[in-house]
Image (cartoon, rainbow, N blue to C red; front, side):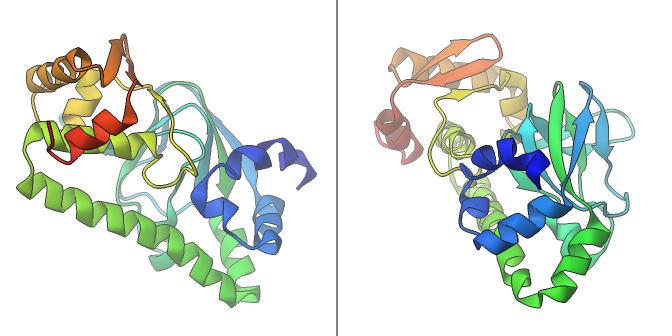
Length: 231
C-alpha cells in the first residue's frame, strides 16, 4: 500500500473512490498493481476473460469496439481517475468492449482473484462496487435517451459536459479536454463535418476554444445552456 501513497491523492479526486470507507480504500490499494501500456497497446478485447478492475492514473484509454474490418465504434475516451472493468467483476463473463491506450498510459489494476477474495471476506463491500456500476448504468440510459430525442448540437454539448465531469467520476470539472474531433464525432455517431460545424459555432459564441486535439471550455454556464437547448 505504501507504494501507492502518491496515487491516493489522485484517486481521491474521483467521486467513487473518495466516498469509499477508508478501510476499503486501504484494502484496495493493498492488492493493487501498476500496469503500463504503450500508445495503441491493447489492454483487453471484447470476449477476453475478466482480469479485474482498473483506474486510469496517467494518459487516456479508448473504450469501444473495433470490428474485424478495423472500423472503430468509440464509446468514450477516459482519463484519470476513471475506473472501469466492473461489469466482468460482477458476472464473471467475458469483456463487453475493447480497451486500448490512446498514448502512454499508467493504470492501477485490482486483479480479479484478489478482489473476489477480498469481497468474500467482506461481502458488505459488494454494495460499494455496485455503486460504481450503477453510476455507469445511469449515464448509459441518459445517453440512449439523448441519442433518440435530442438534436446533434445539444447532444454534443451534453457529451462535452459529461467528459468534463469524468463521466460522473470527478469531484469537480476539468476545463481542458484532450479529444480529437474525429473521436467526438464517433462517440456521437455524427459526421466529422457536422461535429466541426457545431464546435465552430460554440467557439464563435465564446463557449470554448479549439486547438489541435484539444477542446478548452471557456464558459461552463454557456455550455450548460447549449446542453439544455437554450440560445
